[in-house]
Amino acid sequence: MKIGVMVAAGVFVMAIASVVAGGEVAAKAGRADRNPGHLKVALIAMKSLYSDTPDVATNRKNIQINLDRHMYFIDRAAAEGAEFIGFPEASISGYHYSPNMTWLRLDGPEIKAIQRKAAEKDVYVGVGIAEEDAAGKRWETQVVIGPDGKIVGTQHKIWLTKEKGFIGIGTEHNVFEVKGVKMGIIICADGTDFANIKALADRGAKIIYAPHANTTGGTIAGWYRFRARWAGQWDGNFVKSKTSNEGPEADMPSGGWMSQLKLYAALVNCAGLYNPDYNPPVAQDSNNGFASGAWIIGPDGSTLAQIPTSTNKADSKEYILIYNIPIGKN
Image (cartoon, rainbow, N blue to C red; front, side, top):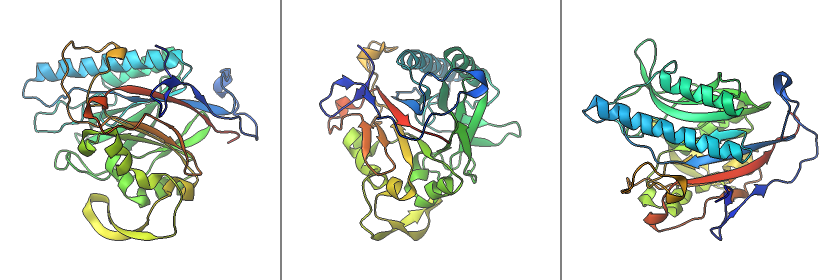
């Protein structure tokens, strides 16, 4: 089956954005630009096994299964011409925290394996880990690796939910370049606080990569409702909302967040089930409750591409969403 963008009819089609007037992005470091003026983004709604069981050997086995899954999806997406391949929150570690967590490092073998694969396929790759840094501090970290195999950007999660008590609170809003355009990362709950997204826009971000690990009732439709404020147009009203880490309520726009900030958004969520079309690592699967879903929103608030919505938990499985974002001159 050919990979492509999932649309409402439930069939695969490749959504190619119209060419934007304004020219092309120059190739970096002498590398030929195979997709001038655009960034072809692949979002991988992937299922991850957990690495916080009492048995370290089981944790290591599950991490390796997750890592192998990344390699499989990178190969498939790269074969479709993807230039940026984004995975969900804690995609390598699995989103489940306990005192038994097996912690990973940015200079550890898992990230090094992703670095080699990114260089091999000449792509950017975004992955998530439960990180222990050189100082022994623990974080939830999303990492973007460039086509040269080097880390180009990282982000620590700011608004802690189920990981509270196990990791530190991120304080920075990092912006970095992907194919010449500035990108920022919003990790799951961080995207419920408008101030976090605006901070990235104020730093020059044009694309928001937003990895999630949400259940939202176990359905894709529930996840889209959860992030409804990101899309559409703003009606001019404000609503009182909690801020990061259950901070004091603040006035936030009632909707249309991307259209107000003139940003592209690439949101992707963890899947609850393996997809039989994608060579699953197990014969018998059980739903872990994650909703799945992927969504690309334009700077006018429109939905550019989206995995089909569903209220059926059986549809909360792995998908690949591909869309060619016009980036023009930067």
